[in-house]
Length: 185
Image 1 (cartoon, rainbow, N blue to C red):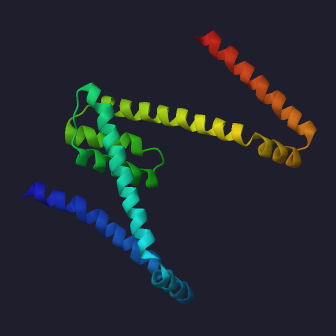
Image 2: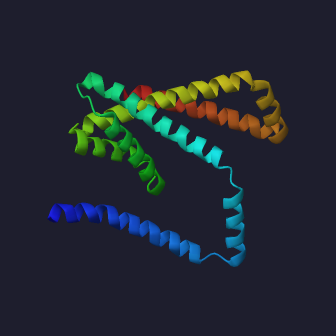
Image 3: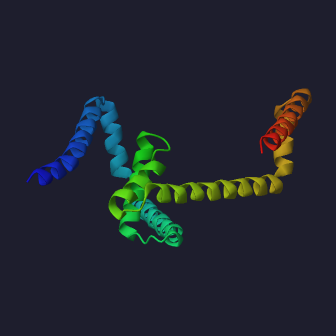
């Protein structure tokens, strides 16, 4: 009986808080804002909204499935549904506390699949490293393909004397970081 009551509270309190916040914000609207909001709701293209929600769900399922592939070599085979929920919780947590979603993914998997937090979090970190490397590759490809446009834009907006100072500072910082890191290791 006590466990059932606690489960009900875990669902009822967030839903009640959400309903209260919506009601609170709605009551702050002026009549003009309410009319404008009603117009937006009436004129919305719900096919585009449905397609957007569908593609978002597909993206979450794909990410959950990819996470299963990363956990498999470690000897864990979590259910796709639990991975999906962990990914969804991560996105929700990131709304409130940026970058907390990665930690919450590991915690959810630990709780529901008994996969150690360190293993789950390690796969998340490796996923982020791969994402960073791919992002840098795409940035360098984009810069290489459109270098002439970027170069002419920068020359138009920044005087050459300031641009030379920035280039010297960046090169100097790069050399300093290289020497600092090479001396540490």
